[in-house]
Length: 429
Image (cartoon, rainbow, N blue to C red; front, top):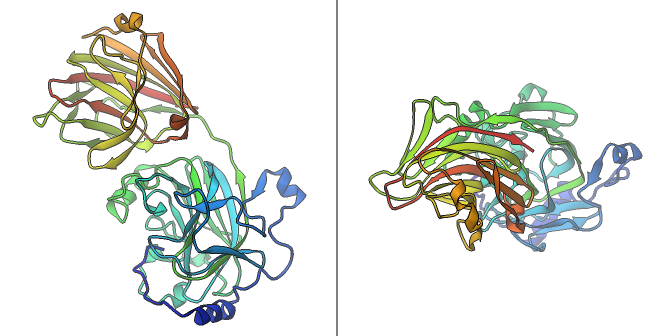
C-alpha cells in the first residue's frame, strides 16, 4: 500500500528464493480459475482465465507493461512495483458487484485490490480515485503500521473487526471478497465479514475530508470504475478472481434543502449563499470563475432546476464534472446565459468548446428576470435538455458517455452576475 517505500532492492537470485520460500511459485491444489454451472447461472464471471493476462492492462494505459505475469495458473506481481507504478486494471468498468479472489503474500508482503478506479491523464496513480481492500502481512512488515494500514482495512477509512480476522500466514492462500451494492460496502476474509459501511454518508465524507484523502478531492466518489491490482514492491499471487454484477437502484434526490449548502462544495472566491429559501450565486470582488459542486457523483439522471437571472445571468449547470486542480472544474456545461446566448446548449470546458448550440428560433424561450425551469436528462452518451417545457437540444457524444462526476453550478468570470436557484431535484436512472 502507500506506506513509506521500503529500500529492499535484492538481486535476482534472492527474489527467486523469496518467491520459492514464500510458496508463491504454484497455484497448487484442485482446479482453479473456473466457474461451476451454478456460479455461471448466478451471473459470476472470471476476471482471470488462469493462462493469460487477457483483460488486464496498465493503469491509464492500453497494453500491459507493468511487472505482472502468469505463473502456474496465478496472476503474479513480480515485486518490482512501487507507490508510483506496478498497477494493473481490468479492461471493463464495474459499478455494483460482488468481487471474490484468492491471494497469497510473500513474507512482509504488501499489495491491494482497488475498485471504482478512474483512469484520467490528470491522475498518475489509481489510489487517489478508488477505495482499496488492503492486503498486508502485518506481522512481518518491516515498518511501523497505523491501524488503518493493516490487513483487511478499507484503506485509511474503515477498520475491520479484529476479533473476526482469521488470516492464513504468508505463503498460504486466503480468500477475500468485496461487496459494493449501491453504496453499501462489505469486506470479507475466508468466509467471514470483517467490516461494512455506507459510502457517501455524512460519516463517510467526514472520514474522507479529515484524513489521508483530504487533499484528494475525487477519492472514492466514482460510482463505477475499473478493478485494480497493486504490486507494491513485494511478490504476491492471485487466482480465482471472479465478479458478479449487481443491479443499479433508482432513487429520488433533493440536491438543495432550502436552508444551507449541505451536500455542496464551493471552489473559488465567488459568492454562494442561501437567503429566503433560495440558493444564490453572485460575483465576488475577484470577478473570477466560481463553482458550487455536489459532493457526490451523479452519472445517469433526470435533473430539474429552476433559476432566475437577477443580473447578467451568465452561469451554467455542469454535468459529469470533476475538480482537476484548485478552482478548475473539468466537464460539460449546460449553458445558462443572457438572452441570445444559447441557454440549454452544451459546452465543453476544455478542448472542444461548443458541442451543440440551440436553434436561433428558440432563443426567446428564456425569460430573463423571471423563473425558468431547466431539465437535463443524462443517460449514457445522450444528453437532452428542455427549457420551460420545450426541448432545446438532444445530443450524443462518446466522450460524455465515458465521463462521470459531479453536478456543479457556475459563476462566469467578469463580474456583475447574480442568479437565484431553487427546486434542484433529480431521479437517478
